[in-house]
Length: 223
Length: 223
Image (cartoon, rainbow over all chains, first blue to last red; front, side, top):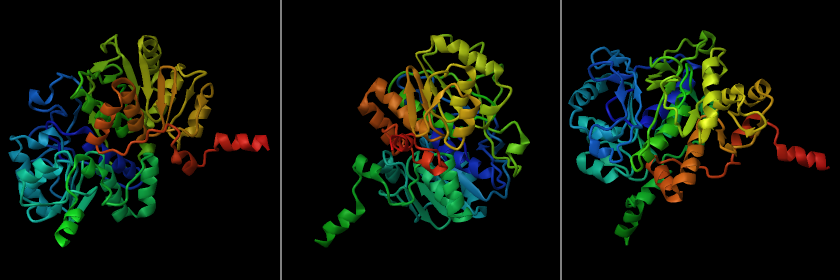
């Protein structure tokens, strides 16, 4: 799991809750990867202008490795989103993702984690989704990606991208089902008392935000 | 937010995701309260027997205060659950909860956080709920509480208790709605792309676990 200043808490801890539960039944190893030190990483945005109420409500978690010390044989890399995904200081993280991707089995992103993956270039030409409130700005920031507006998650090759925040839980449960089977995924889901969405096309938030439905536009073209 | 060794990640970060989002619109302050130091607190269970696969999948987060240094004028205290809720080494935390409760506006528990609140004695005679897989053992450990088997969350006076893990998100959104109104709660819900349950009686997990339905038993008595 990649960490950076201003990550979104549930983008990290939704998937990790599901995977930590799985780790009680199957051996799993987690590395929390920060840029160049293992100093705690805060959910606080870098810019004070993103915390207009001057709240002190942020959390810090402890990385277990840096880009240099993380294992070279990672199987799965997960990239969370959050306000920090727009940071101009992510160059080292973008390099790390670009360099790591060819050796990964899978890359997963949650929320605007797909903005980070997109900025690294590895999503070019691929289908992907992202946070729906941020959809248009992400699309405009990384135009070489086939962004899917109505999707809880999207799979293109070995890259899984989810919609905003909570969608990372549904994507992770589906990922678990792919590798450990339906019974285990159901057990994890029930353990965390979560109402899971198994249809990747379920996405009321795209409509709530007012994103154009690609199917509707097809109908218009047909007429 | 209370922290202790072996807390459940989503019990903490589900509610905090909703509240951190709210903190972008309203001034909020968070204190992460550990027992007697601000050393990072791990989600790892104390007992190796609770990690049978020898997984290294745990996360550590950084407290911002101890029982002694936490603000004395806390408005809301949240207690998460997790394997650590059964620890025999929670006496200081139980004392802290017992001593703090009279000065709080509200106390919220997530999952087996209600076991901790129950062990402190403050739930005696009150209605409460807890994690459904743990329901019978919690009921037996703290018998002086009116445990509700079929409930996403329960409110009794100024104490709100939720069912397992993800249920803490629904309870927190309802708590936000009570104080900030329906529009703000809906905005937070959409921001985190969460499908919210607004009915506290919604609880398929009680049936999945096979807990007896109190309404059914009433019908049987009637016959």
